[in-house]
Amino acid sequence: MSSTNDKIRGSVNDAVGNVKKNVGEATDNEDLQHEGEGQQVKGKAQKLLGDAKDLIGDAAETVSNAVKKSGD
Image (tube, rainbow, N blue to C red; front, side, top):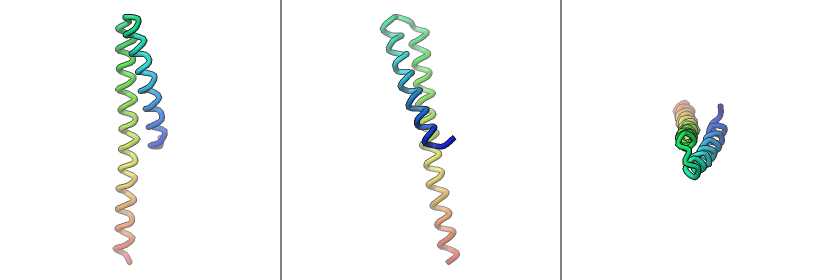
C-alpha cells in the first residue's frame, strides 16, 4: 500500500473513531466509546506508517543521488 493510501485510511479511521467515541460518550455506551478510541489509535498508527514510508522513500532517493554523484 502506498504512503498516501495509508494516510487516507488513517485519517478515515481517526475520524470514524472520533465519531464513535463521541456517540459513546453522549449515550453512556462505554463499549462504543472504547471502540472509537481504539479506532482512533489505529488511524494514528496508519498515518504514522504513511509518514514513515515517505521518509524511507526520501532517504532512498538521497542515497541513490549520492551514489550517482560519486560515480561521476
